[in-house]
Every structure is written in structure tokens, then in C-alpha cells.
Image 1 (cartoon, rainbow, N blue to C red):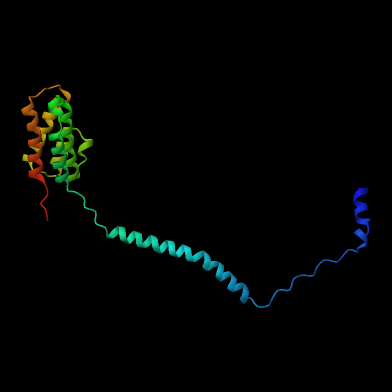
Image 2 (cartoon, helix red, strand yellow):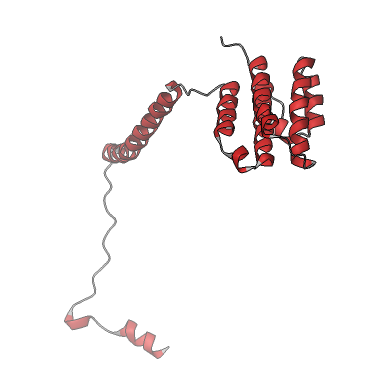
Length: 184
């Protein structure tokens, strides 16, 4: 406590007297300079934001104008069937993979064409869904035949001849030909 008392009791340092505190600053009565300054700061913040949003809106408008050429389901099916046909799976003796891909391509086509989740359904459930979708019975029978033959190869270890295996692609292609949507 004695140190604190000594600090308060000391006289001016180096012979100078203690000065009084400064009086409060005078504030101008006009708010115009403050208003102008605030507007300039807000303008510096708002201008880049506005330019960014405008550019983003233009980019979105340009992307909406671009027309994406989505291939039709039958075009995709034709391409995949051709790729399977030109592959060397039959020459290598990989008949199971060949039939798996044919069945998968046909199921993808049915899924895209009729909006049926064909890839997630068993063959029996798929045929039932096709009946509910009011697809012609003759097409359902064709699909059943192709998928049953593919299932026999995949699950029952049936080994068809190469000519019989290559006929699966022709059958699948005929199903796609008969059921593709008319081009408008």
C-alpha cells in the first residue's frame, strides 16, 4: 500500500506539472459527411456482390439455353448390344458373362423405356410389373424367353452352343425394335 501512496504523492516528473485531460471533441452538427461516408462504404461492398450475382445469373441462363442431346433408350440399347456382339466373349468361351450383359442391357432398356425398376427386380417380378404397365403380352413373352434363357446360363450352369448364344442378341434386338417409342 505504501508504494501506491508514493506514486500518487509524487510531484511532476522532470519538473513538469501534470496537465489536465483534453476536453471532449467537438462533433459537427451536420450528419452529411457521415452519411456520405457510410454510403461509399456500402457501395464498395454492394458493387462486387451485385456484379457476382449478375454474372452468375447470366451463366445459369446460358446453361439453360444449352440443349443436352440425351440418347433415346433404344439407341443406348442398340449401342450396348453391338458392343457385346463385337466383344470377344464368345470366342474366349465366356458365355456366362455374355448372357449376363445381354440380360443387363435388356433390363436397362426396359427400365428406361417403361419406367420400371427392372434392374432391381427378379425376372418373375419384372414380368409382373410389365403386365401392370399394360405392355403387350407378346412382348412380355419374348422378354420372358430371353431372360429365362440368360438365367439358365447364369444360374443353372447351362452351356449353350455359340450359335444359340449369339441368337440371344438377335432376340434382344428384336424386342427393342418392336417396343421402341415412335420418333416424333
